[in-house]
Length: 174
Image 1 (tube, rainbow, N blue to C red):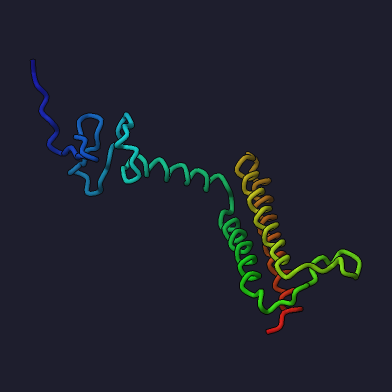
Image 2 (tube, rainbow, N blue to C red; image 1 turned 60 degrees about the vertical axis):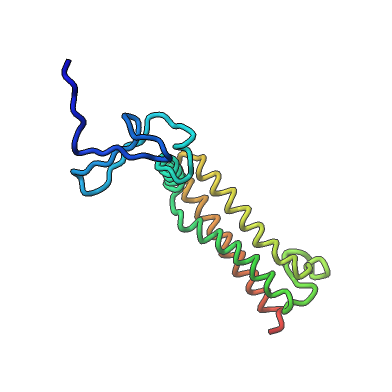
């Protein structure tokens, strides 16, 4: 019986106290870049957040989610504008009167007015529309519809932010 000698180009590495073996990770010395083999079976030790298998699978899943939504930067900007809209209102509460006009579509009376904290409503609606459209864009298969949903969420966030800033400049006392 002939014994096969171990390959001199690979060295077994211990991860979380587990020896390398056939299922463990091995470091190739011939290649200047590190190439790591993922273990075939996932034990409790390999599911640790700092282990290679856990982080690689998590990164792959998040990259797949991001790649399935077109124009991702527009989604990010829409989220940022919605949050910035809410934060702006909360920071400028001292400069706003107790009642501000928000509902311009109603008859000119007390129905148009809301409390100064009520100006947060456009920001909340913006975040809701962005979350809903992003979820629908993730589910749908048609790229054209995905782009329409993302761009509509972006446009809603811009219009909401501009309207809120105009109301602040209209009634705010700076």
